[in-house]
Amino acid sequence: MKRNGLTTAVRMVIAGALAGTLAACGGGGSGDGSAVNASSQGTSVGAVTGFGSVYVNGTRFQTSGSVSSDDGIEREDQLHKGMILKVKGSWDGRGAGRADDVSYDDTLRGPLTSMNWDDIEKTGQLQLLNQTVRLDRQTVFRGATPLELAGNPGAYNVRISGWRMENGDFRASYVGARSAGSRFDDFNDVEIEGLVANLDTSARTFEINGLQIDYNSATGDDDFDLDDLRNGLAVEVEGYLEDGILIAREIEDEDDLFDDDDDVEISGEIYDFDASGRSFRINGVQVQYNRGTEFDDVRESSLQNGLFVKVEGDFRNGVLIAEEIEGRDGDVELDGRLEQIDPSNEVLIVSGIRVQLTPGTLIDDDDDDDRRSRVEDINGFRVGDYLEIEGRQRSENGGYLEAFTIEREDDDDDDDYELEARIDALSSTSVTFMNLEILLNGYSTDGARVGDEVEVEYRRTSGGQYVLTDDIDD
Image (cartoon, rainbow, N blue to C red; front, side, top):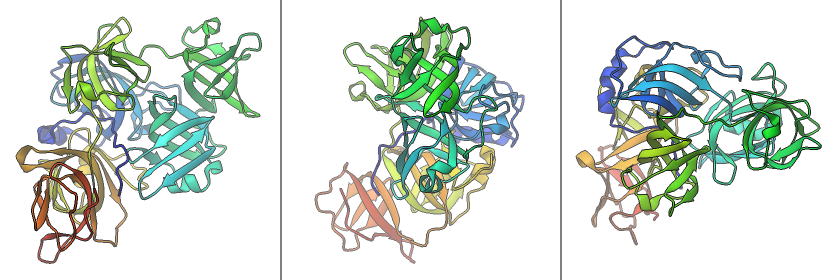
């Protein structure tokens, strides 16, 4: 198992504080009517990590059950985990919020052209509409498994909800699939967003990442004037394909996600990073930080293009003034067997490692099309389940794994476990990670030091001890 640039789009807080919230959560889409003592009023943009009502950026937002969208989604029960939502409302510091409006917009939509997928590393990429989309362990698939999509890409249309990357490609948070010929939207077959290039106002054509777009029959949406098209402008285009050309029906510029003086939280990958100017962009939003900005799980000196972060702050005059920047790159992977469950404190013991869930932990199942509530997600765990977990290594309370994503896999006949993490202690007889001591069992630790990030394979003996089954790989 090799690490693959762990990322996630969810807010992380210690989950013990969520027990009371969980007790109040139902399985339906609407809110429970409980009061929210709001400390922030504005807009939260992030991926759905749970339901009952919806969890976005670590907050459970009470909702009316309706969704604003031009992409064939009108109700909350049509949403899936991984879809990126824009939630306007209020929230407090304890993970409770109220949504005044929930909106969804596809990032890309159209026929799948090609796809590759490594089922061991859980990474890959796909192409549609001449756009490249990166896939990883955090990508939620619905309608078809990644192996089915990669095995016969021409048989599917897909909708992508994702984050724009530095080079103009995308990272998928969600991939929904339907058979080729079926539609997600009753009117427009395809949707694309990106920067205008090679604009020809006479022929009324332009390109987005090499895809030619004909806008002779298009209208401007949301009061956008097509005469304002220019190279470098970020736009969203909807229409249909004809001989490989996108015939545009509707074009709109990418308006500001936020209102002026909004409290804001947004997750995404950094691009256009400018260290001297203390600025960068996330999904088209310019972020400005300063000496007063707080940094959590990331240092200012570590900021760079491609780093996944969550930013909280105030939106002023088209710029997000960052009050806090939180690192979202994980540093642990664990594949193992569930041994103990403490649902009231949201703690799992997996192959000897204490795993702490949080309000932002994404819990997913292979081939699971059901929209279970978060309570049902947690109550669905069973001792003996084989889990793949990604997250962050914490040193508090003897050490534990703060889970970003948990995926329940089909039963694994191999009782060897895999862990990638930093060494906390090392002796002549054992190695320790997050308070778990693993006996060397005759295997080598040559070159490994305390603090190193290494890969280990191990198992549990009939006597309850944990032993290595291979040399440590650093």
